[in-house]
Length: 473
Image (cartoon, rainbow, N blue to C red):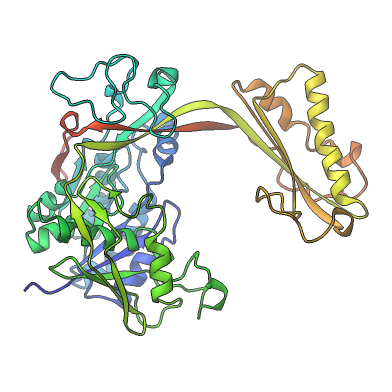
């Protein structure tokens, strides 16, 4: 039987700790793989904005610096391979930048492969008819209703002209293909988060695509580490009581040939790997626990067994899998207007009442001048306002300080720009006790709506490409 595969995660999102990867390989140099996840649901829309300014910048540039931090490890003979979705909208440009890092570090033996083909924007058009050989999967409803919103059932035609990105969540097969071809670093666009872990398992254990229970186990392992330190206590119920919670260790899974895994973390790091913490992460963002859908397999979490093996070692086994669906999920984003948020602090007697009245006054003045907003919100932070339905334990009259936050959204930019000029005047026209205006005039920000839908797998063609200095797009 093949030895367990050691896979760690060094990034749970775009903006996670940049030094985590170097810390992991220093503490655990025998890791087989590092995975790094950079893509949340609307990350690609942010990359689209950046790419509009610089056509070569549609990827998570943080990863290039992470790779640079790993140069000493690889120069010393380190063998850990990397799988990441940092390629975003442009895996080729990401690979090019990484190749320059390796060239400068005299590491030409490290082979980079890219996985692309997830961009399906050209397919998402109003009234796009379903191909004649399709069986009309959910979310792809034929003439007049293609790519219906999975949450609302609304037709894509309602927002299609405003689409910015549309990317299918690819699975693990192209990652495994790249690794079998000799890749040391695999850079993808949009793939399902757990597939970053499943791909190495497919390549290492030579599983067949129909080894559903094994693939289900690897999918569970990938799900456990995809959010980084959440698997070692971050975001957990007992975070305040965790040892060294200012230095949580990033998670490692040791995946066995049968798909079971042991969750652990590097010795000497903070946090903990316990049964309750692992169970909390198991339940994070899964929908139906009896039918967790990924492009690789449909997983039942209901048969899982979670047991403590020793300190900071928890075994997870018993996953059962079924054939995956014949569709990929698509994460599409579209332009949905503009927004701005203004903040200012108010303290003293009746601080909350003054703040609310000041916020109402801003909106009244703007309305009188012809500004209309699709949405507006006045919040007094510190009173429980950030959690809908929460009743504060203190009455407003007991609070002597609050942060007034006023937010607006509109279909066009002009009324939002006008709003941004109304926060600073509260310093002189607002109530006594106004302070804390230190961030300057609020910025007008674009709003991106999220459009989840499905696309038949037959319409999506993943592409695996080796990258070398002489490669061309």
